[in-house]
Amino acid sequence: MNILINDFVLVFLMLLRISSLFLSAPIFGHRAIPAIIKIFLALVIAYTIFLTMQGNSIPFELSMSNLFVLAINEVLIGLILGFSLNIVFWAVAFAGSLIGITMGLSMAEVFNPATGTSNNIIGEILFLISTMVFFIINGHHYVITSLYYSFQILPVGFINLSGALFEMIIKFGSTVILLAVKIASPFIVIYFLLYVAEGIVARVIPQMQVFFVTQPIHIGFGFFLLIATTPVFVLVVKNLLRDFQAQLLNIIKAMSA
Image (tube, one colour):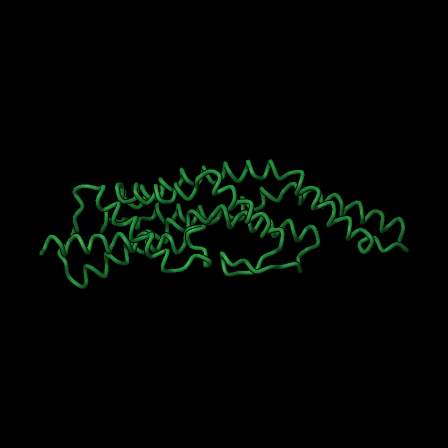
C-alpha cells in the first residue's frame, strides 16, 4: 500500500509539471482546446513517462508540508519551461506590431484568442505564420520530448533556483524586444527613408497634403514588402524556434545545477 501511495503521489507531481507547461506553452495552452482534453493528454503523458523511467522515487518523506512544497516546485518548473517556449512567439507578435505602426495600421487591432490580448493585425498575421512554422518543424513533438528529458535531468522534487537561472530567464525575456527590432528593422529603415522623402516633398510643395495622399501608398507598399519577405521571415522564425529549443535544455540544466 505504501508503494502504491508513493507511485500515485509521483504521478500526481508529474501531472502538475506537465499541466503547468501545457497552460503556458504555445499551441498547447490555446484557449480553443478544451480543458478536459488538456488534462487527459497531460495524464496520459505523465503515466507514460512514469512507466518508461526507472528508479523514480520521492526524495522526501510524505507529509502535507513536503507535498505542498513539491507541488509548488513542479508548477514552477512547468511555468518556466512554458515561458521560455513562448519567447519567439511574443517577439514575432511584437515585431508585427512595430511593422503595423510603421505602415499606418496602428488602429487596426484584432483579438488574439491564443493569448487573450489585442494586437495589431500585422502582428496577428506574423503570429499565425510562426504558429504554422512551429507545426512544420514538429515543435509540438519537441515540447513533449523536452518534458521527458526534463524528468531525466530534473527529477521530481529537485530544483535549484540559483542566481544563474534567474539571470538566464531575465536574459531570455529581454531578447523579446531585441528579436522584435531585428525582425522589423528592414521595414523600419525603409519607412524611415520614405518619411524623410515625404518631408522633403512637403517642404518643396507646401500646398500638397503629402502625408494624406501617400497613406494608401504606405499600406500597399507595406503589404508588398510582407509578401516579398515572407520566405525570409519563415526561414528566420524556423531558425529562431530551433535555437530556443536548444536553449531550453540549458534552462533545464540550470535548474538542476
